Image 1 (tube, rainbow, N blue to C red):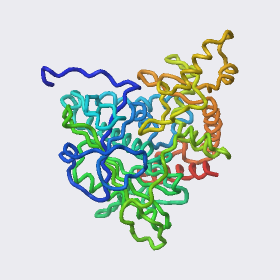
Image 2 (cartoon, rainbow, N blue to C red; image 1 turned 180 degrees about the vertical axis):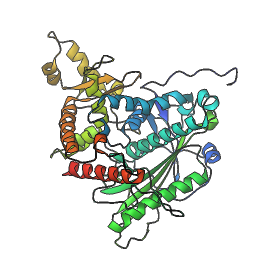
Image 3 (cartoon, helix red, strand yellow; image 1 turned 120 degrees about the vertical axis):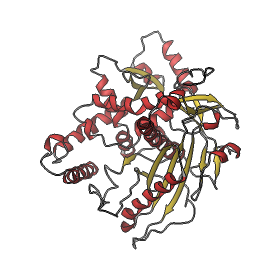
Length: 450
């Protein structure tokens, strides 16, 4: 039972700003919790990689973390015929975070800091069995790895490696079970950093981080390198570990450990790496900023691909009895595009949106799309995910692009034998079934890129 003087925390809300201690380091290290409590935390200066090892204290928002939970790599093909399952998947990703995390006050080390930190709550500390804790740790690790790689370091869309590798890369161990005495460790995710033109391999860990788990995570990343090195691909590996003990309070704040390493391209297949992080990626750029600079439409397609789960959820809400879509006016030329650490535009901080909404509301004629555009506003479609406090949305332009992409994906799926569950035979061994499924997913991805 929790202590008698333990008070229930208020649930976290969208506007909640949160400070996340982050440790960057070049090499292996042991336990860091005592170090975290006594070391200084430098200001986060917005660069993708700090000049050296050390602690930093970026500030983000609960919305950025929820966006990371929704967006972390996943093949959307299972929902092509059942979009309403996308709503359930989004709920499954964010509910554990709401259930087991709380906020408490912390020191404001820098002017921009919020003075709030994430910690476990009393339910996680006292009322959660080991299996539930393991499931939560997985979700926490994947979410914070997505947040760190995309919000702090500007990585593009992420994909689960068990579903696919970069185009043209084939994993000889995919869909097979390792033989006795042989291991085929692989990391969790891969992505492409467009500004630096390099693939990333990412391993996510969450929960009580021990040196043994860190070493195992590094072995998984090196196992992924054995797949990329024969192709001569210049790539980066990133071990992202989110440490959170079950205890409640300031001694057990959540913090993130990031260990990157640059592997230059080689045709020899050897596991070579440079010392340190290599060249640093460019400054983080939001999807909206990229769209503003998009002259060919390719960026719009990439953003639409990364937002397909959200699109499917919103499209399912159109015919849902639980919620409905709303149009929300947002300034087209928003000012500050992102907070200290995150790509989202925060409407409550955007003066242009407030001013133009006021101007639109003061017109004699009833507000409509034409009036909104004349006032410099875009219309965003938004909808609340049933059984949650989460409202998602996207611009009508992006929604229309996602709709076209969704239809194209359905047509590709119809032409991909073995992708659908009804196309798979059940009278074969599990290993052969997995091999066929992996081949179908790879063919599906290749046709998407055509």
